[in-house]
Length: 146
Ligand code: HEC
Image (cartoon, rainbow, N blue to C red; front, side, top):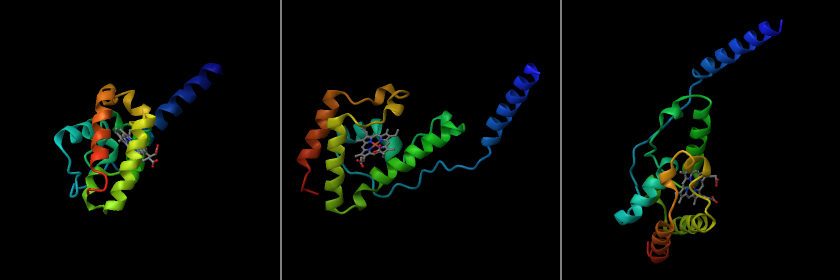
């Protein structure tokens, strides 16, 4: 009986994992029209550490195609884009840009971003102190200017 139950749940589990692969989810990358304009040095840091969740240029890894991991990743990207989207940056008015710059600043100071779940798999995305300083300098120097 025990063996039967084990097999039963094993088959059920396997079928569930296969079944959820057919649930439709969207991994979108809409056209980029208003990408952030900034010096290459700045853009490269953002692209390397933030663009996967905060732009329309997400590089979707293979495991983003496997449910249920895909749901978590798509959730992060959707949520991230809602808060801050570098692909729409140049369409924002100066007040909104200032607000976001302040929020980016806070994330840098508090080590809040990139999300830990992300740097766990993308070790190279963790911001080094020098990179943070470069970003801070840029955030500071561009305040109230655009
Ligand atoms: C793995 C996806 C991911 C990456 C990579 C990532 N973020 Fe985020 N970010 C999110 C999510 C999800 C939210 C919204 C929920 C939250 O605040 O935790 C967010 C929110 C933010 C916010 C708004 C915070 C607030 O209080 O509203 C800022 C600013 C931000 N991120 C900046 C960055 C910067 C700068 C980088 C790169 C250094 C970065 N993020 C990398 C997923 C990500």
